[in-house]
Length: 176
Ligand SMILES: [Zn+2]
Image 1 (tube, helix red, strand yellow):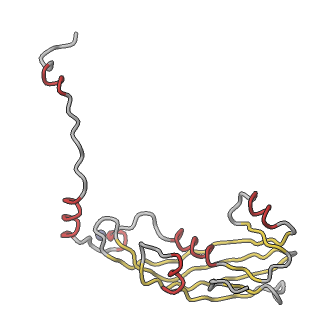
Image 2 (cartoon, rainbow, N blue to C red):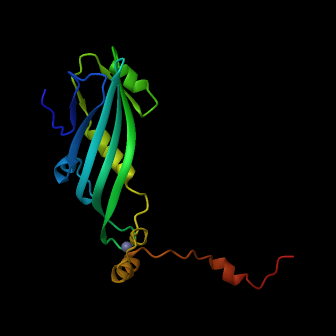
Image 3 (cartoon, rainbow, N blue to C red):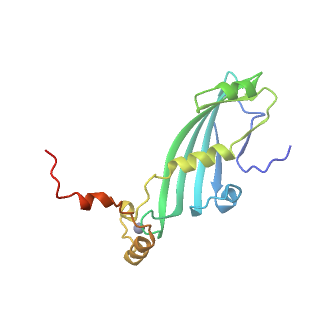
């Protein structure tokens, strides 16, 4: 079966000793996810895999950088990605049911006949999780583009002042 997947780990022949798979992820990998936010990604992915009793344990490390716009001034800045994640795949006879009921995101299931691990979606999610929630120039020792901040402030919707027409009329009345 040919899938449009780049990060594929063949399971046949994997023994209990640890093995490492390396992938260099750039724009080609991100194309199918169509991320609107970031550009020029260069992320090295190292997948350390061990097999024990029909259970594949993966330690996935991500290292690299990508460019992302600042939340305040929209200027593009380069941020570093450096994270590690664990993921486990267990071989079972009813993987679909097990995947539907498993609550722990670190555990996934596959059938005894599966011959490959397809990891594009998982790795993409891990990369998104590695990006800080708040992305500001100041967090990376940069300065915001002051012209841009000014323009964006002007474009932002103005807060609406709520008017109470009777308030003015009765303001001389004192409540005792
Ligand atoms: Zn900024």
